[in-house]
Image (cartoon, rainbow over all chains, first blue to last red; front, side):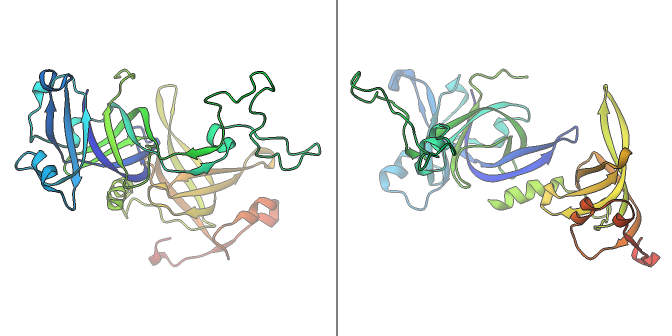
Length: 209
Length: 124
């Protein structure tokens, strides 16, 4: 398990080695710094804490948490790695932790859609457009039976706030790596708006080709 | 940030001398590499450039030709694709708009375009 933090820069397309046009998301990654190492002994689990991005202003305790020689960092995220002994506090990570062809999972905060109806939020079908119907086109439909059970089931899918949630897209293929420009590109889309923080980790489920 | 996207895109583009110089109305032969049964070969598509679309790495152009039985065939090529190996311009036409969609509604003599001769020095 490897990981790095970055900022979504936007999408474009590139031509791969056989000349096929491929949609990619460009992510500005790193440089990330290892800010803390969680150990079994002290914390009950093993992980590394990564810091990314320039902070405008940090208070004393925040600054004090960061190791010496590391710039003021805006975002801190933990990543469970296989072997914490491979990392040390203050270590700098860049895009080269991944190589082209790696399978990765990318986590971000999805774009907020506001209060969305059932069609958009849960892919309901809506009502019929014809046969004398009115005001039913985007309706939720029935939300349950009558006197039995006499209430609406918990978890019933209904309209409500959509998006602005932590979302992970699994098994994206790394298409480009450029440590010099702190750049990583993955095939396909990534959650969130441009400029949003994303965490890139090796894929949990996918098998390396 | 957006510059990163632009820089990735920039790497994908063909250089000035490699880029075919095309305009709407040109009669062209497009050479494309296709992979077929594990082998690579060049396929040629000849027709009239119907439109040019900009868009960085996604820039493309559409070529229209009349296939057997008078069936119109349109094919869109990515301008910067490495699979589009070369584009020969056979003749230019005098056209008065950028998108020649009106060709779709015409056939035979009505679909002709008037040739525009360009002085050799401007690179015909």
